[in-house]
Length: 401
Image (cartoon, rainbow, N blue to C red):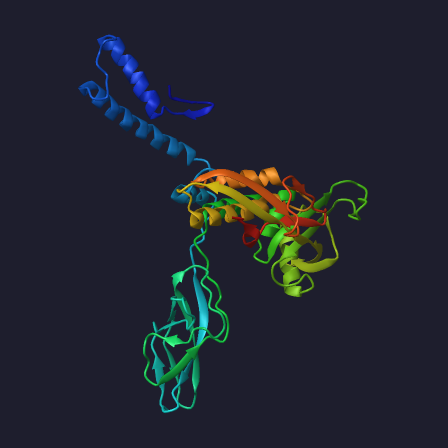
């Protein structure tokens, strides 16, 4: 019997519904009533049971999608909107193209917006389209024009590979790209959106340990962070003074010694740490308070420890590696960001649970092993020192044959 109470929702499946209806019909018409699948009543019974089971399943789907950790697609978008978190759209790769005039021409040459070029590399069929009109002026031999890939996503273009002009432009002799393309992005996945929502909510926690960490990790220049709070009246053995916070960051761009980078980090720490709490570390930056007064904020850096993951699978004919493997890689990378903070050991059983929770179709058996050097893989755990944090990158998740 379906139940919706304080313990949650339990629905009736098709087999439950048809069995209950058979029992009710026998009570109403007698045990000898013909309920075979080919009988008129049996046919109607099957139709009604099928419709009712689909209605229950629809209700279950609505129920499940009321929880951020289980919602997907547009339902997850709706839930995140309550917290002012919006899914990041797909973006286009961008590149600068240099067009060169023909030696036979000396007049102005107009290169229309929407001019198409492609790669000279065999097998690369991506079309790149200029974003605006440009002119090679008389007396100039070249002009640089911004262009984007025709499709969204991380589409690459190595140096000097975009040399085929699709849209003919009179008196233009050649085109090339003197620098690699800036990669676009795919539409943010459900897993990444959930992780970012968690980060944004944690950032609102202000002076809590998780709030300070989440605030730092919300900065585009920070990949990860470690927070050590000393709320005692004595210095810790590791050097942190009384009533202090030590914030250590792993930077993906800039350096801790750069004034602009240091100021960005310092301001984030100042905005989230508790009033009267001193900062500690080997680097410093200038933060401004609400009155515009300057304060020196100290912080440190922390390094990541790459974790390699091998996922061994036994699959059937319904398994689609092009769907399952990117989803598994993304889920493991997101798990790493949220859970593998400084000094936290990597537990293989948790890695296996992340893979299993992806729910990819066609997987009959699954096992995982992990490594710190891509040579020695273990099936239990990896020890991460206190001054490092484990980092699982999508590129280091492999699927051995």
